[in-house]
Image 1: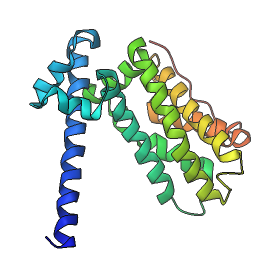
Image 2 (image 1 turned 180 degrees about the vertical axis):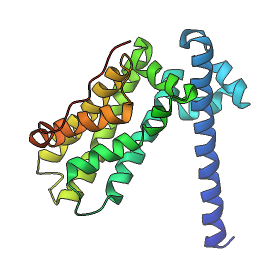
Image 3 (image 1 turned 180 degrees about the horizontal axis):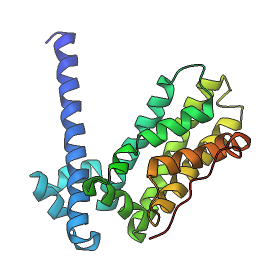
Length: 212
């Protein structure tokens, strides 16, 4: 087997693994929404995907981690999108847009997309996993901010503080959204700008919401 064939084979295996991991996560979300999280067993998830329990444990330690992995993917895409934003764009604007974009689908009020996000923010069993997912995203986000601003990711505190503040802003905006009628992307834009460019955000009109 030559190196090209070997590389192609490895790439195919990685894509299959990623597809299996995503299928398990999506099945966990769907079943939790349909039945309630407490009524879903790991065996129910593996049966839905037609894989073994061992396959599940190759990717996740529990059903809560499987559900939270979808948020991890969203944050990873936001970090990559930040690297792709125009170089001359203000960092606060870039951060606001990339995190809002990852939640645009929820603004369409598609129940299949909205329900999992609400569940993540309101279920005590999932809140811990959600917080761990956000904390894990801070390191890659800080590195992307440092690369974008020319800061030293090891010696400069600012990228790390900003990354932590942005993740907290996203979490707070999402929690607020669960009881309000405002579009989630708009809330995220406002919250991220408030921590990334607070003085500029002071001059922006606030989003007025009514609670359900």
